[in-house]
Length: 301
Image (cartoon, rainbow, N blue to C red):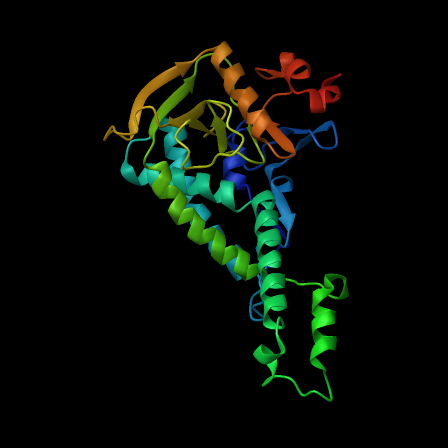
């Protein structure tokens, strides 16, 4: 039974693919866009949040964390093979890559915060509806103890109370979304890029959905989008809907030159939440970072 409290939403085995030598003791450069600073770190110290997978299970609050460790052990084998062979060879490897992509996309603090807002709003609405008329609650209220109007006034004023959602509710919803998301990823044509000159970076939001036609609302199912996912500092896949009627899962294996890596890294930066990760202090796109990422330009000044 694990007792760790530092739970990773970006797996350590994945982050090691962007470190200096891919080993357990290797380090990577972290560029913190929120706090506008940069530092060197081991993968175990980034892409994590305290008690992110902790549940109200008295026998083992880290049950989910322990089970995820088993899943990540299997996924890491796929990543090692793909990185070594520089190709995704089997349907199982694709499934494992897609599963990892969806894990990072959904099981992440930012979308969980959205779920939290939705669940709490729905809970408050249901609570208010439950006392919307005296007739609805007449069998549940002992008038002398809790008069109906007082109960309604209390519930109507949301500053009187807080609603807390058990974390396992979020986790259960996330895993359901993961399975649905994989089906959407399978509908795309995927292109496999091998670095020719330079290195890919990654971020705390590695599965980047990029709108092609400037949409402001888009998601996994939106056809006019590309999905970028760096597998390692040398490999990256991009999925689009241009050939969405094709029966081939993978389109082409291509090489990425300096200019293309620069372009891809720029998209990864724009899709990040707070941090980006690289094996080097200097990377493709950093030289034009200050011109295009205005909100965090002085990080490199």
